[in-house]
Image 1 (cartoon, one colour):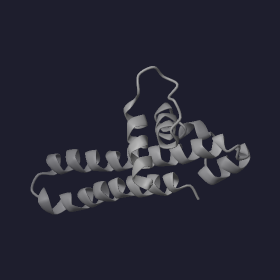
Image 2 (spheres, rainbow, N blue to C red):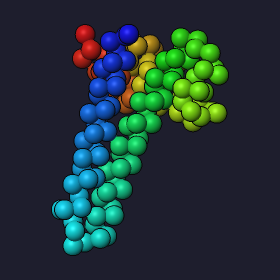
Image 3 (cartoon, helix red, strand yellow):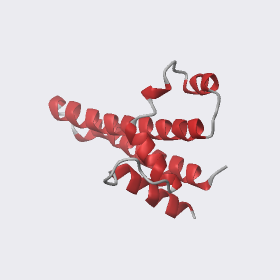
Image 4 (cartoon, rainbow, N blue to C red):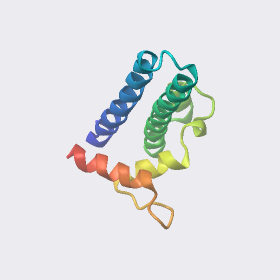
Length: 122
């Protein structure tokens, strides 16, 4: 198992768990203000979702680069269209994680984050 992938999962799960814990705690912090609770809980939940989506997409992109059978990848993702997860950001993140040169001219943020995760894995 590549250490970078394990570090990737650890990194994103920490963030996902923190956002979910925040969403859970908001009920007691804003029990008297439904509008504030709605706003903050949705921010926290969508931030957790974004990290989860990026994590799944980055792993899926890695598996595509490893020539995993497309049908098997669809089965693992439980989705008929892997491109739902393998976004530009996921590919950028994978490039940073694996030390690949990004396809775009300027280095996107997720490339830098991927590089940081990879360096932390070693």
